[in-house]
Amino acid sequence: MQLASRAGALTPSSTLAITAKAKELKAQGKDVIGLGAGEPDFNTPQHIIDAAVKSMNEGHTKYTPSGGLPELKKVIADKLKKDQGLDYKQNEIIVTNGAKHSLYTLFQVLLNEGDEVIIPIPYWVSYPEQVKLAGGTPVFVEGREQNHFKITPEQLQGKVTSRTKAVIINSPSNPTGMLYSKEELEALGKVCLDNRILIISDEIYEKLTYGNAKHVSIAEISKELKEQTIIINGVSKSHSMTGWRIGYAAGDSRIIKAMTDLASHSTSNPVTPAQYAAIAAYSGSQAPVEEMRSAFEERLQIIHAKLNEIPGFSCIMPQGAFYLFPNAKEAADMCGCSSVDEFAEVLLTEANVAVVPGSGFGAPDYLRMSYATSLNLLEEAIKRIHEYVKNKCK
Image 1 (cartoon, rainbow, N blue to C red):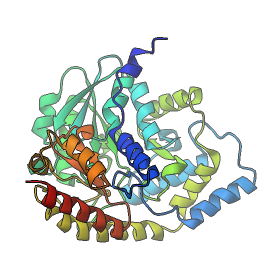
Image 2 (tube, one colour):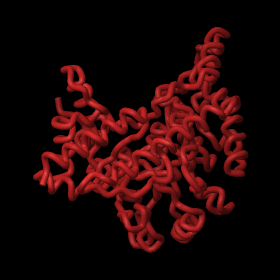
Image 3 (cartoon, one colour):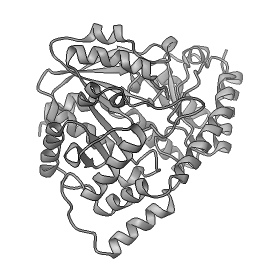
Image 4 (cartoon, rainbow, N blue to C red):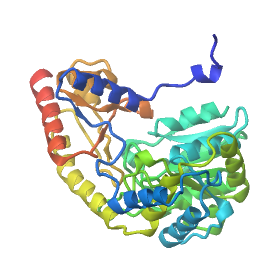
């Protein structure tokens, strides 16, 4: 049987591939340290778990509205008001099966065949694949390392055509951990307003920022930008709830209605007890969020310096999320590898450290390394890489 062409056009996830290989080696008894994880290593806070259990014991195990519980939409609106100063009505919010599903559903209702979506490089691996699945065309623009992997207004304007429908802004970024400042967002926003381009603002890592860095949503800069922005967010990263699958989109009511209608014919509602857990996540104590953020910042301060001591590695200090994104091209060359992808394979099989090649993010000279694991394991992983490069490479 011949599959649909859209299935054949997909590129497999590099993060899932490296994770699968690492698990395979672990099953063979290899002492592999995995730095590919895109999720916090903390358990979901207890009060959130308790809220889910309570909801099930009270009989909340049935369908909810496809777009999410009104009570959850209210606490999401309260969160957006408190954190960003933004006002959203319930018909401007949809709750989805994770932020990834928000993006997927948005592209499905937004794009016609050939519509273009501008995607900055480096990008999260699923952006271009989801655009292609919706019949759209990804248009890439390089965020250069010398500009901390961020695109400029001039670069954005240079990619605009008559088919441009949207641009994605991911701040803090996966995989680089970089943030756009308010001034940078204002400049990009002007290009979007001038050209009537929808802004898709992926803010899933907003609670994980370090040092003096502060997350700013482009939607909070002006009324006009709010009207032209769809915010994508969720509880996965901020509250260590990756497996609960609760995300949301907030924006123009017409787009949200279309997304809700599509959900009603595809997934129906997000898991009911998980929605009650998300209510507790946003309305309960935020102390566990800060505890996790603080732990990530401590790890970053320690391991970033150690990473830059490895011959052939160069890494800018990230401002958020929980990834390091070092340039490893020189190290790969020193080790006789034809590419950084091959170097990542060698690190897995020879040094027993799993990292994700940057090619999956559109940046083939780099590696993505998650520090969402214990400090002891992080230090051991970097020690192994350092010793391998020092002893095995020229």
